[in-house]
Image (tube, rainbow, N blue to C red; front, side, top):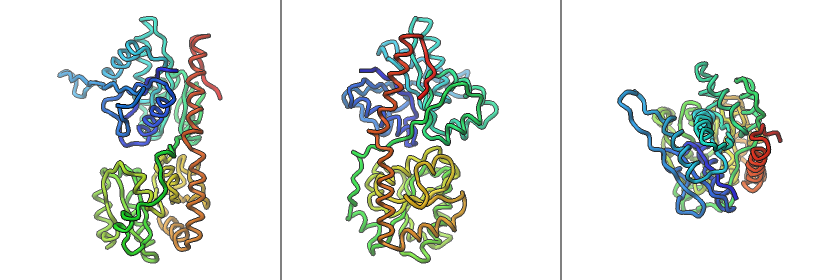
Length: 386
């Protein structure tokens, strides 16, 4: 069994969720998993066998305007690797985590410890942060210095190759869903509260950042609601929430739209939904769309980034150009207006989601863990190739 260090952002974002669920699954198989983050990941129970949490304490220096997170993280990685005798580090995000892991690796090598680094690219470090000319060289360096690199979609892989001077092979390992955590039987009591007259239920879940285009969700629903009795659940919080709430009032649909804020009970909410709306400007994968499909909820989404790799057009839902709210509303109506058609889309969504079952994806990560360790034993490093 392996001793694995996992570095991630411990928030509600997709990368943190994937990293946490991966670690939990590895621990269930007997591996020793050490999470190294600045706060406890939201989906992590530390009182579980083989799971350990190491908090990164960020030291404030009067000399610096901003706390040196990278320095604190690098020092913590060195400490945990040495004292827990870790076999490898799996870091999620090139910046800052792969960059910091390389710094820690150089420090450890001075003490005769050579630990491999596997980096998983999730998107924002490439599609947003990576667009900065100032950070580009650092991102290229961090990726190229990793011993093994994976990306969560083919689209993200190609975007990374286009945007940076990459010398490493990048292997696609998609995000996944743990079906053991999803009960597709609806909570009828909750459904009667949200839709007391049997209205169709649409749902959107995000961090309400501009890239999620939450106002488009409201506009799509406004068009749809002219023909179909429906309710909309808006799950999450962020900078665009106030604008979305105001728009729902301006369009006089605020009585049909419920903003519920952040929630850790996503499967229960998805279990009562009929349709999921995700009109994002960009999504490297679209984990939340996969979560919806695992709950038998078809998806109306944009056709950007990795979304078409998850949501299959005219099968598990529909994909449209970013901003085309009229087409998205038309497709939503097409799915919802016929009960048999809706059931067909639900079944196809559920079937497609099973392609991303944790049990199918976990062995691919295990393959790279073992391959990189075998290579280190024989020649001190590797460039992973499928």
